Image (cartoon, rainbow, N blue to C red; front, side, top):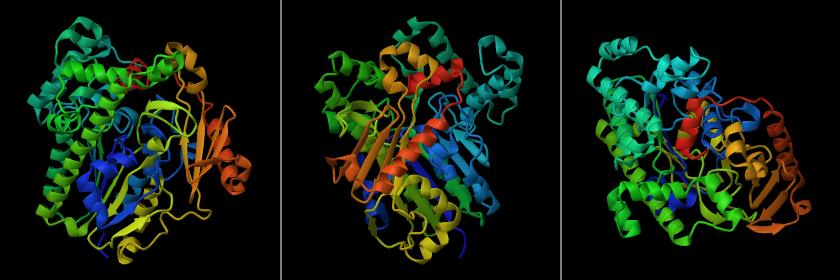
Length: 500
């Protein structure tokens, strides 16, 4: 059997229920392919989840979950390279970027974060990483050799676009240093780049890759991360009108998203001054609009495959690195927004569709870990397609248990800024699923068990399930002893994503 092309599409921070209800293109794809009702992320935030996706291990096994760490290897890419795949990366996520070593192993990698006006131009993020490596992890204006930077821009194959990228980075740096510039009502004068994100940059690149590869015999692999469903929530105007009944200005969207800062949300809950319900309803509606926005881009990609004549020989996988809390109260009685310090299914359950023209329509209801896509993409595409999707070897575990983990996110900056949240910031959470069961164990001593959503005593849960959950927690705590100080650029990146 000829090796199949592979498109692995990650909708960042997309929860299962929203994808089911508000993504018609995804639903249509799922109806004639493999649709997983209980897909579980291996980790509750981006860095460990992406590492697991490309190495097939849980966070307690690979140990990559602390802010400031880099991803030192991506075995999936090595395996695909050995099979003569051309490997493309297209990512708007700062963790799935050159800053964290995520570009290593790709033949071509395009960073589409908001700061990058032109992804094919000079990569300012990769340049920043090179500066940090030669400057003890820090970058400041004095560490930049401007004549050398100018030479690099002029020598680039797209010098004008490269110059625009550098200029955009310069404007953002000026805004960070001179806060009065933030009063200019344009996202380029935001000290962070997230409001400048556009999914068109991803999809335009993917369409061009598909067109180019249509005339080449060897297989290709595309990894793509879309940040639409990640905060800040700022969907297309037409979806603002559809879901909210109005459109919002940049200033209004900025204010709404500031109110959704995850750690401040928890502080407000504890202080007895929670975020008002009307604001929460608006945030939820904007989030749904973001799901519709990214779903449009899936439709574009599928159309591009059809137009290029590649649909019959391409495996398409759509999933999320984790979900998102939107102010709901979970089964542990905790209320969260974003993707921090939570064992809520809204965070841990994600969409997962595996599609190919040779697959039959099939609904898989048993819990499945997204990390097991590694097994599918390295060894399992052939048996999966030859059995029309019936082969379960890539996701079926020996004991039927699927795990997820939410590592503690404490660092020196968070602990200083939110001293009243030390218990939450330093808490590890281990979660295990099996059929109708869910159990949780935390490093602060709490344990919970539910069957079909109804809480029962932990002693009544299957012994193997609770013991696995406890063992994973111990290993997670053991592997978290290494500390790393955050650089200034780490802090800026984490602030932009709402992790600080």
